[in-house]
Length: 176
Image (tube, rainbow, N blue to C red; front, side, top):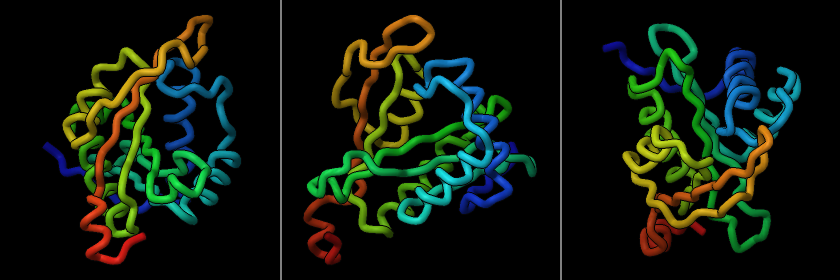
């Protein structure tokens, strides 16, 4: 089996990451955007988001295989130590350890940055995503029923959380 290489997201990743995201937008309920993004818009989102949060890319057999990112979960100051995560894996890389490798590296970066909790939303049903998230330490915390509308239907969204570092650990290290 080929090794997954995880590295920082770069300008060369914009087009393949946007194409991957657009496939999820156009063909699935995994992503709730309704219209595909232009590469320029995706690049602007990456540059804006990566100024504060980690974005990572994965390669498998020398080809782009997916990406993950963290971002704002909620705007209020009380949520300042919590991030929302997202991971997108190319079809050719499913079940080859790409999602796990991306999340492992993302968690390392988040802990180093002082983040305490990661949350993830998953459109249900999506057993593959649920398995991935639970395999890397997320635990289910609830479901919002019928909150997403796409393709003429209402969809449930489950939420998962993962503690990155305990409150006690962050006190010892001086993280806020």
